[in-house]
Length: 184
Image 1 (cartoon, rainbow, N blue to C red):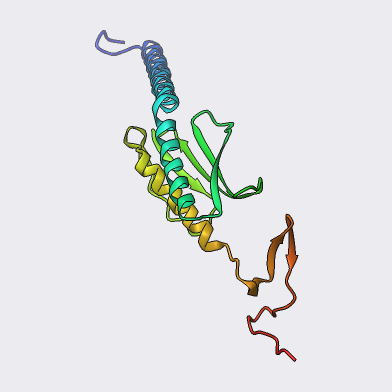
Image 2: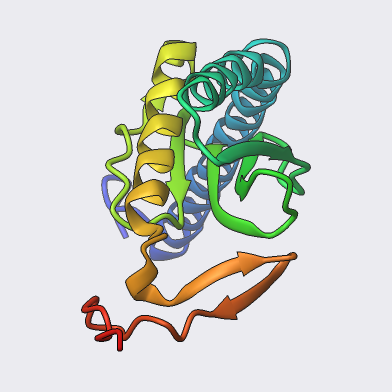
């Protein structure tokens, strides 16, 4: 072998060492990125606890007050959340413990606050950056959930259901078609 030619053994060792170095660098880069992500998330959770959750609470409370002043029978009740950066509200009929719908604000790993509900037809606002959350944004979400709940609730006699003494009862004096029975 001439001096200009590389020994295959040396080339194999050099290739292995280069791959080992690249692999170690990739692992170190991944660990650094994960630490930075965890630090960003921890700062976001701290901001959630000091500011964001308060803005959301004020917005939902304002919506609740506005509907209440207009004679709405439903209200929002804040609930404990198992998720560290989440605000959970239940819509309930006034004076009742039974949940009609939920409204949840959740801080996701992408740094955005997402709004979720099980109220059908609620036109929820788009997720927003945590730093862009306002009480007005949360109020809009709460309004949409309450509107969906109210549109989904039926209190007409043709449904035949109503609350009496805390128990749901059937009204048999009017058929489901809504037509009145002839008297006589």
